[in-house]
Length: 260
Image (cartoon, rainbow, N blue to C red):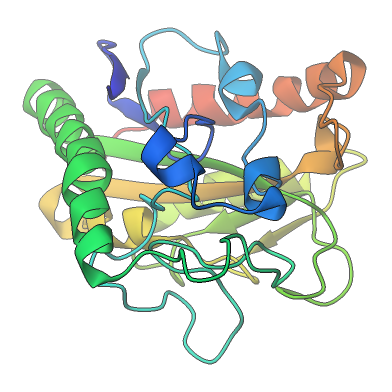
């Protein structure tokens, strides 16, 4: 089920939210809002495809409404006190219910989904990080995300184009954070922020342990940088190609990075 491609470099791309598969036993529980899957990280796998050689990728085809593999498996909130969605989301990013009345998953169903979908993704991701670390002495996880630019339920105003998350500098070597930040700031026509509304999800925070040789950084892209940010969620090649130029430079820089 989990899709893995193995490269020979130290860089691993995580793709937790590009999947659109919803098993029938979950699909029958969803209302029309849930079935619309508006919160998918649309086309992110396509956007990053082929940018640099040697990278490994780990992707789940299962949609985040089934279970969000970028959430703490315990169910703890990533952003206490702020609106967010949980391990098995009950609402979309606009705060609207995604389940038919009385059909939200109970604790037993959440446990089943955690074992069936969350655990296998992280087993595969951990295995890839261990594999490349064994080769190079370190591993670098780049977690790939995107989101609509305007979602009042989650944040005020318009989101910057490049949202870099390192959990306030704790998940990677500072030279990695500095390099990616500088590249985003120098991207003409794009806005960026470091550890703003999105500081890195559970994946980045869990695996990012620089003292143990595993570095992690999250990139949350505004979907307006490469696609139509509303249904039918069309990939816009001209915009995407411009953005891919900058993403290529970022991934090349990370692929060439070595601990000092």
